[in-house]
Length: 202
Image 1 (tube, rainbow, N blue to C red):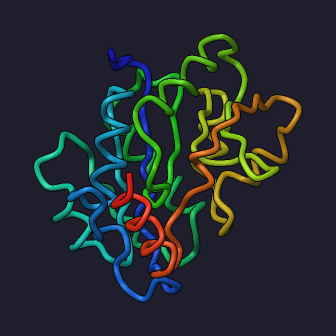
Image 2: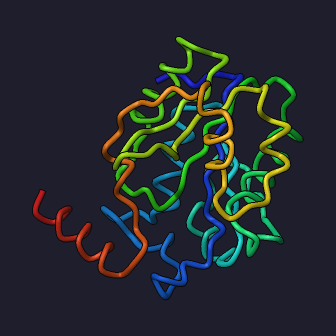
């Protein structure tokens, strides 16, 4: 898979994981921390990646040590996903002025891989002025791809619901790609136990 020089990714890994009760993004799946899996998938599909840290800054940074990614710490992580997206995009733009699109993904969507991101990016190639979002469970959301025209709005996000506000605001320009694996995320210890159980059986 060839990474494209004008394509970046933001991996959101700043939350407190209060429902999980611990630093969930450093727990292991197939021997690898969740956040590292997400960062590696993003790095394989894009040219530059920003991992946004927050509540569990040190643990997350240790989990992605020696990866070729930008680590952007969001000092306002408590205000929600929107501020983390803005933090990540600002960090990316400080590194490159060539970016024409950015993929946004959640580090706890444990089953997503580079092939899924590549599918979204391929769809975006077909309609480069559109927003492309994963469709699952009757809705659409992360991972999603925003073209450069939306960068200013992304940098101004503050709300807890992250990019969903933009997906709703610009619904007429959103292309939805069915992606069932995006529905699997780790919110609780029970979610993790179920995922580990499925992994063990497979």
